[in-house]
Image 1: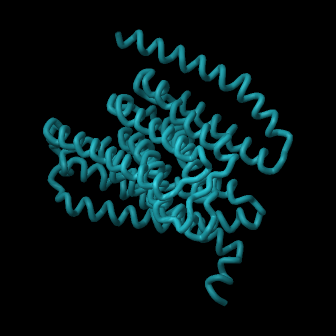
Image 2: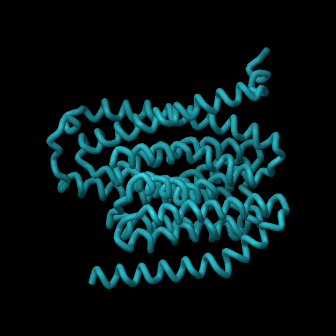
Length: 361
């Protein structure tokens, strides 16, 4: 019996899923530990490490999956997985991390990285307006990524001069050893993400789900598991800057790097479905905008806000599945969100922002 025959067995898929999840936890633990040591060795803030190497490394499975999907002719998965991953990262990863420990938000995130993430989301919405992402759009996204990396480099140089010297043993660990540990952890996360993704997609295909749904839900969630595991481990260890920075940096890399490389190297321009334009892209942009008032009001994400994020993702997931399967629940959910949930949420965020602004005057 070949490996392909074994893959068809439910017990094999279950075993593969369990092994993948265990490797995710191990890889995330090693990645957070390596990031803390490397930040101390290079004398940079853990936030910078979370926004850059941790975020980009944990997004590597997303790049591999989107590029492979584009090459094999399934652009709905290539684009949908990026949009779904960004929504999942903010609502679920930040939501669960905040439940573990209220997340402290740096002023740098509110002043620089969050506006850049919103700008990147808006840029993708504008470029995808004609329902196509071609090589030119991919090049523009990669140029924007280089600009962001330049800003991060400038931040690291600034904090390298002002960041206090650590007095523990992590400050004396050679940076090359820390980098090797980080690369090993990223390799574990990549392998784990592939194992979980392969098992999950097999189940989704057997259930008859469409490419868009598989991309927005199954693929997006599975490729976001490295970010989720990394942020949760960071939150458990009390490294709240890494937990938050990993999410924001991953979202920026997904939009500018993953979509940029995929659109540039795909054999044909990526087609963006009308459903993605009408619903998924606006939701992704709205979720990005949501982080600004939440982060600004007190520069933290509380447990209550974490629960709010999780409830919003639950409503989003129910709407996607019910709309695709033609359930009557889709119209009810849409009516509930448009006329009740979103206005109440907008009013709450407005009052919180005004109160925070007055407090800081």
